[in-house]
Length: 355
Picture 1 (tube, one colour):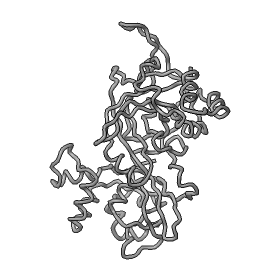
Picture 2 (cartoon, helix red, strand yellow):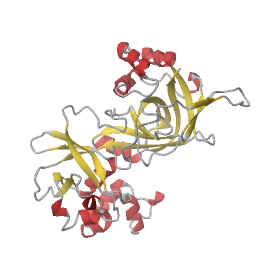
Picture 3 (tube, helix red, strand yellow):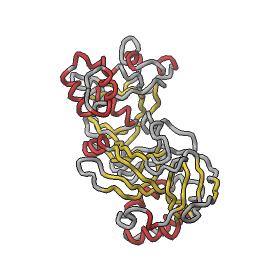
Picture 4 (cartoon, one colour):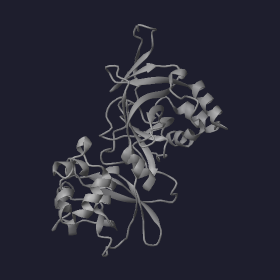
């Protein structure tokens, strides 16, 4: 769970209030839920419904059923007993048991934003050497140490007092790992381990792309340098690297876990493993954990093909705020990183809720 996705409080167990306002065309049920309003929809209003491989949702759905959302216990039991044989059977099961609701902002806005995230996979060593010199630190017990700035943590005398779990090569990779909040590391003997989010120093987060722009080193579009440019700049300006890194005072600590199955993703805010392409982070005040959702968006450039598919709301983050807002989990490795870094797409969103 990334540092901009701090560990959330348990979601409300109360069902949203239901009202039925008069509409110009026809009355539609409306459920008010925190930061969002849900408006009842028909299945034929979901763009691309029936074209997705609906059976691919089942592993993510069953993982979510390990901690079912309020009102989902009975349906989760049915989903466990009757796994679908194919995509058509999966879609029919969902249509029989669930009602689609379009997610809107409180003012009725239906357009939102989809971004992407991933799980970094890095080489690491237990002891530092000439190449592996960047520590992954466990959270200190001393509150003063834990709340220090990045510059203080990475400088003496504090640095030598903190406990490294392992060492990686690139300080830019460390900041990427800290922004994503968890990752997997491969040690010298080939063993894979997971480093999970272990807390942060409660300082403000400033992405390196924004910091580079503030330094006058990026004058392109968007007000923030892309990750590839940040890496390129760091390679060209090693003598100024700390000047850039320390502009981000946020520091994320880690805990270490076994990784017995490399095909299983990290745990999200719901407390269950994330599934590449089928798990999303949401504003938990708008969409409860464990809820299937229908996404209407596009693949990142250069393709920009329609991305219309089922996913499960299984994570959150402080940057994921608003009704029509998701962060799409791409998985792990270089391809996932490339896709996640380019994902900033328009979105429409539907939740699928028990009838």
